Amino acid sequence: MAEVLKPTVLWLDGCFDGFHYAHANAIRQARKLFVGPVRMLACVHSDEEILKNKGPSLFDEQERYAVVASCRWVDEVVEGAPYITDLDTLDKYNVDFLVHGDDAVVDAMGRDIYAPLKAQGRYREFRRTEGVSTTSLVQRVLEYPRLRQECGYLDRLLEEFVESIPGPFPVVDFGSLSGAMASPFCSLVGAKVYVPGSWDCFSAGHVEFLRRVKEAVTSDSKVVVGVWSDEEMTGGPPLLTVVERALAVVQCKYTDAVLWNVPKCTPASRLGFEMVVNRDAYQHEPDSAQVIEVLMPPLQTLSKLQDRVHGRIDAFKERQRPSHIDQENV
Ligand code: CTP
Image 1: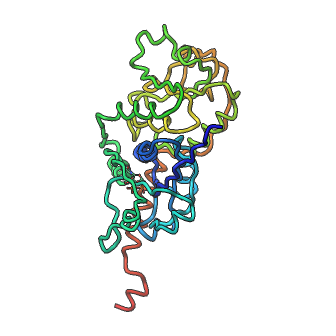
Image 2: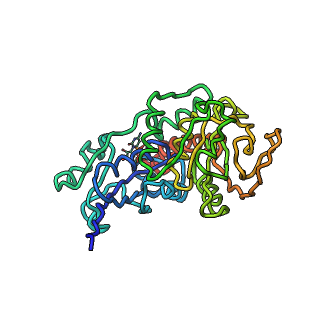
Image 3: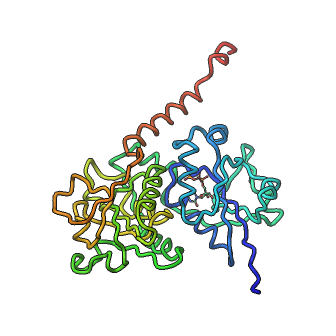
């Protein structure tokens, strides 16, 4: 009988606040450090831990847990993970290695918090992804619509994401389809269901929506997510570029294929799809695709994100102001 290989258990902790493609890439890269089967524990700090150690988070813990759990490279989410992971914690969860990006993580005294794990050979590192962070996301929100970051390597990252997904996982730039209408994307991938959207500020609402879409279709129906091009967005440009938005849906486990850079008004039937999820009023051209109605949960919109960013800044200021008691004692 063939011996079943015991997976290497990995612990990757973080805030995962404003989940972005660098977080997904961290999880993906961490897995790739090891040959053989891996069990990836994505360990997410609670709101309270983040508040104590860093300041208020943008997204609350339930939202952060849900988005991390939907990443296709995660096997399990450890909710409320401690901010500083010690050897006892690794042993409690039967973890082989803690994995982290190559940015230095130090305590208030400037000491490397992973030194004890490194000394025991229980630490591994991957290269941190450039171009995005929670801080830069906040910055983009504050400078919206002026700031638009374009990273040349994102097309390559999209390819790397696809290479890390077992089985065929078609991801196609609509703009690259020559004679797009002549060779409908869905016939290339054998898919029937199309779910187009902007997928900007990808968060727990989007994840829940895609989960409901998967639930609403038969198990052999591939769900193709369409990502609208930057130029086609109504109500101002998106916060994230089309490649960044494509990366967000590719890493999500409820997606079977992605067609990105699609003009918003393109009817599903013109692309060759038999079914479309929640056909919207903006599509004025006739569309013969059958409509599947899926209830949309409340979504994180740009304006809600702007409110959160300002709320967080106010909370920071509030925390920095001496308290009433302190003032009395001065
Ligand atoms: N990470 C990464 N590249 C980034 C951001 C994060 O590889 N651009 C990695 C971190 O090194 C860590 C994991 O993602 O291993 C979880 O990150 P998180 O705690 O959310 O870390 P931050 O470093 O605070 O991420 P951000 O700057 O986005 O807030």
